[in-house]
Length: 257
Ligand code: 13P
Image (cartoon, rainbow, N blue to C red):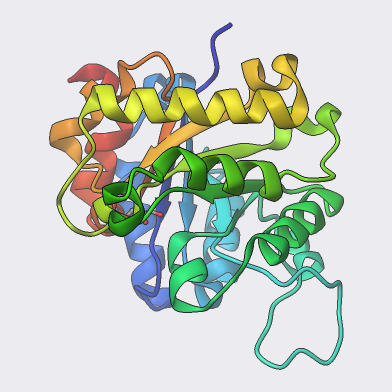
């Protein structure tokens, strides 16, 4: 069964709201129907740019989706500095990244917190992008599969299999993020396949057939086509290269390369 690729640009802590508008305008300038037909294209700016980008998408009827990089799991409350899933849903946010490795390793998010976020995002009618992946140390110790299995099992705990259309899992080996090192296409494919096996264990094989597994970690115009040719890879979660309009547009046009 063909899964529609999801190409998402995670801007991390880059771009103020004016730069964000400019970047989206430049990206869409390079894209046309062929690209939108082929893939779902999403930008994931910082919170401060969400409203501006939402207005731009709406006003210009752009065919791209909006994502957020994180959220709290409660609807509201005394949580200074946090943003709730209800607030994001109100801004027509379609995807929310849950458990990005920077959240796990820099801000100490554990699997239970990530799971609460995944469930809260689904409860608000949005789609989680659950990030999983091992660090360099874990890989060296031969623990990559154990880590990915744990991230998937605990991350999807208590999630109903009938929400499978709404779930995305991103395999992002931490050693490949922002380092310029990419997993080889066949390694990435193998680990995305392993990720899918774990999804099958958590939610059943029907769900695993449908759920998109993205690869993330130093994806760029020069390697995207080869990665996207792999059978288990259903898209890319792009960091650095999504901050340059030419590069992100080229990634979205990978099928023409
Ligand atoms: P880079 O593409 O910069 O390696 O970042 C990947 C990433 O973390 C996307 O979420």
